[in-house]
Picture 1 (tube, rainbow, N blue to C red):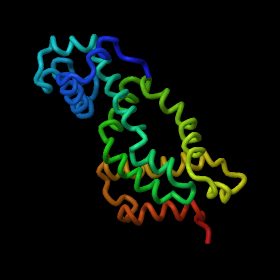
Picture 2: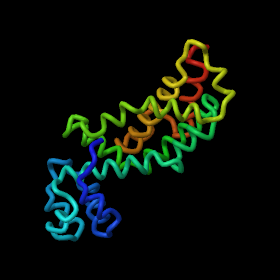
Picture 3: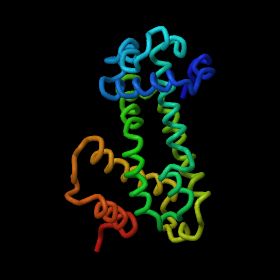
Picture 4: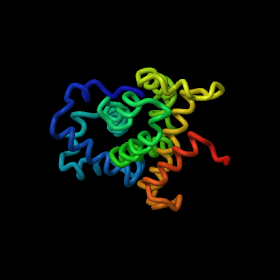
Length: 207
């Protein structure tokens, strides 16, 4: 992801900057990038337009810094999914990955929506590198996690690909439930849906 302007980095942590970013996140996720003006952000943040330009040269710099800020927090070691990936053994932890995915979708709903904004309005130019690095990150997490259980994965299954597939199926399920507001779209409560995913991934669908 491209880095923001140097003047933004120098003034990081200032109260007005935090208000600007919070306002921008709210507006970008509600009205889209092109539907939000810098003046709108200033009004929502309760700062002058000139104050925004003390931190950012362009509106896109605000958008990029938001993505960078969320990405850094998202991949912090204390986040539920990162904890589950690095402290429990795959595939024994499949249900745990499901519940961790639910927590991540709830906690980072604004970040996920901003990713959609980037895909629609920027053709994913800011987030594509993060997704391109994803397999590398999952491979590192699998390596860092406890061993033993991986030996039970079938020899013709790529463990990293399987881990990605499991996690992203859970994410897609909870994005539909939490962000698209389609409650119970599998006809099951969350706990049963998580267990069904785990049962299918571990044993398949055949009797």
